[in-house]
Length: 301
Image 1 (cartoon, rainbow, N blue to C red):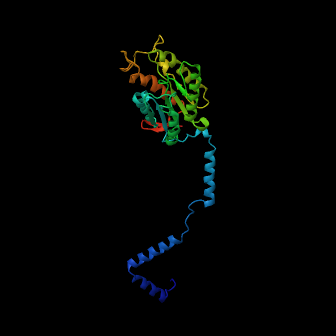
Image 2: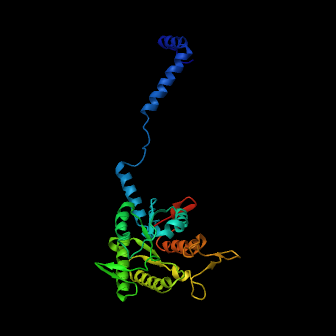
Image 3: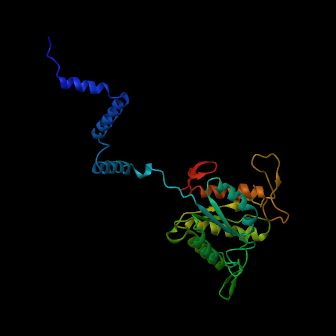
């Protein structure tokens, strides 16, 4: 026979039978909650000192990558400033603007008819560049001047005609001044000079050729980033004469190369012989692949 059960134990068991089931469930839940609150949580991660050390290590590893392997920052507000005479304002601005916009680059244009390098008394582009560059902060400056420069140059009270040998030296000095101002301190800004086009007449054949030569020489001698767009040679035919008609790229029929005045170039000639070479010259200073563009992932350096 087993040991007899005490009376107090029997009474306790009887009391438990009288406890309602829902009370037992509540007690169990409370005990479970207590167990949860007192159970130690696993550590969330390394202490702050260790996390800081790990971040520092990651930065060190990233900085160890050669700078040439990292993409250069993009300048989303990249801009080109263009100044010049009537051809720029009438027909050249449009294709330049579209060509630059395709690569996320803006264009600011200031054009005035009959303007030149030699006549600041009529319109002083040099002073205008000094005003416009601090306003727009362009990364490149395009100058389209030279076709109207076959005229006397004033030095003090003296007028020097284009036939005077001193005219060449004075013109070269002014071109150098334009390049210095356009490129800026340290000569860090790119300058593209679009030369004059050829047209019929002795002035263009003799003086225009000299203007083209001086511009090409001064741009080539400039110490900063500069390029000369030779439009004069591009508007001569196989006989060395100014073009009268023109065969557009991909066309089978020739078209008139000039407007009704016989001097200004038709739009298709401006596009293919002026705008496209200018954009090609700019591409030497801009990296078309690296600036955000509406047409693709392109950037500018």
